[in-house]
Length: 444
Ligand SMILES: Cc1ncc(COP(=O)(O)O)c(C=O)c1O
Image (cartoon, rainbow, N blue to C red):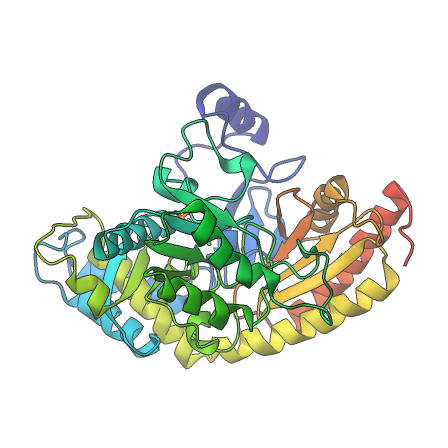
C-alpha cells in the first residue's frame, strides 16, 4: 500500500527536480504501475496491461506468485531473521545454493550471492584477475554488464559510459551480430571472423595474456543480439589458450528464460569458468549470484569478500522458491513453446511490415530490430519508441534496446499462455499498422 497518492505530473516534476538526470522513463506519457499479478500489471488508474518485458527481464515465475507470497509471509510470521550476512550460518542460503548447484553446468561447484548483476560481475572479474595475476578483460562491443565502475568499463555502449570509464584494463572485441555482421558476411559466407577477432585483440591490445573475457550468451541491452552457437567453442578455447577465465553473464538469459535449460551456458555447453546471474533468478528480488569453478575459487583462499546483504534470508527464500516454481510449473518448456509461437507470429508480421528488419532471440528473450529501409538497415529509432507507445495504449508493455534504441525487446513472465501470445501478436500487428500510418510504409 502506498502512503500517498500523487498525480503522474507531480511525480514527473519531482523526479525532474530531485532525481539524477540519468534516471529515464519509458513512454511519452510515463506509467505509474501499482499492482501486479502473474503476467499482468495495473496502473494507478486501474488499467490492466500484459507485462511483455517482465519488469526489466526480471519476472520469471510471474508477479506476486502465490507460492512466493506464502513463503515470504511464513518467514515474517515466524520472525525469520531478515539479515544475517554470511558471517552467520543460514539455512536459506544453503537451500538456495543447493537448488542452484543442481542447475549448474558440470564443474561449477562454488557459489556466491550478491544483491545485483553488477556486483556478481564485479566479483567474477575480481576473481579472474586474482586467479590469473593478469588485469586485461575482454568484452564485446554492444555488451552491458552493469552500472558499477568495473562493469561499465566493460560496457560496449557509449550512451552508458561516463567520463570516468574506462578505469581498468579492458579491450572491446567485435560483436557476434549476424544481422549487422561487422565483416559484412552472410550466414552462408560466415567464417566466424568475430570469434577469431578475440585472438587478434589479445595479440595486439594486451601483453599477450588476459585475466578474463566476459560475454552475454544473448546480448540483452545490446538488443538481444544472438551469437551463432559455433561462436562459443572458438572463443572459450582462445580465452583459455591465453590464460584467461571465461565469464558467462547470464543476468538476462538465466532462470530458464531461453527455453532449454535453467542456464543457457549449460544448454550450449559453453566452457565457462564462471556464470553470473541476477534479474529472473530472484523473480524481482534484489539477488544476484556467481557460480565458479573450484580452481578459480581456491585461488582466493586467505582473501576476504564481504557483501552485507548478499545471501540474506528473504532474498534467498525468494530465489529458492522461484527456482522450485520454474521446475514444478515447467516454465522452461513453456518459455520454449510460447517463444516459438511468438517467433512464428513475428516472422509472419515481418512478411507484412517492412519495418521489421530482423526477428531474433531464444525462448522468451526475443527481439525485433526495426529499420527504415531493409536494404540500408537504417535504424528506425523513432518508430521503435512510437511502437512501444502504440502497444502500451492497447494494453501491452514492451521494452527496447540496441545501441540506437531501435530493437523492440520482448521478455514476458515465463508463465504466459497461448491466449497471451495471441493477444501480443494481434496487438503488435495493430501497432505496426499505426506505425505505417504515422511514418509511411517500408518496402518489403
Ligand atoms: C547482461 C547484464 N548483466 C548485468 C546487468 C547488471 O545487473 P544489475 O542491474 O542487477 O546490477 C544487467 C542489467 O541490465 C544485464 O543486462
